[in-house]
Image (cartoon, rainbow, N blue to C red):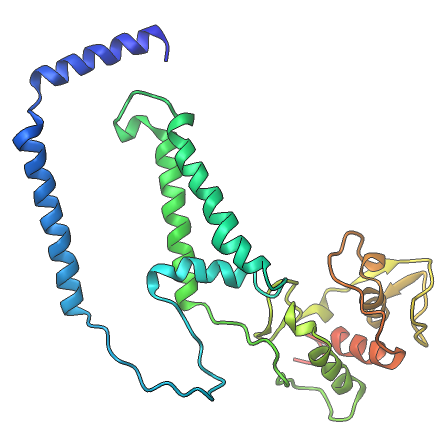
Length: 273
């Protein structure tokens, strides 16, 4: 704070002290009034919106979707955002890393914005931080309450256009049994770590790769891979089809499984809906 700001602050402080009211009883009185109103509001809402007792727990159910109390919805949503990566990443990121980073930023705000001015209209940085924090918490809470939990580990996905016993049907089986749905979502089924594949067949994927495929697939040859051939390349060697891809390679699949899976993926959004 420069000298001019210090002098202005001293003048304002002296004027406020001269014209202001003592802490006792005025400030204490106001604090008690606010405290009584807050507690009355909490008691009133508890009486008005009672917590009911749900049906008895059925331990064998497979459709129950556990959700926390509303004041933990924001953490619940963070866990959903980081789900299906590893066993520890969601817990570490959602309950430790992100909350603590935000807490450090909150504690650092007074040291970053060191103005003596207390009027909120004169504190744009602090006001912006508070607004962003409340908006973020409100959005995460809303998403945690209303967002549907992805169905991971499903055994079937309803499609039109897939004939039982066809290559596409076999490719859907590979997709579901080899863990693809743990990261990708198709028609609301699966995880959210990777891109949504519901209409991936309409994307017109293409890549140039001059190397040899780890698993030779009849008909899938380069150096230009497009359509079903691109999905074969991307499944066997993701970084060959898309440099920098974080998707793991599935080179252990057989040539038939790779071709069937590619047929299924290439038709999503066009032939299979």
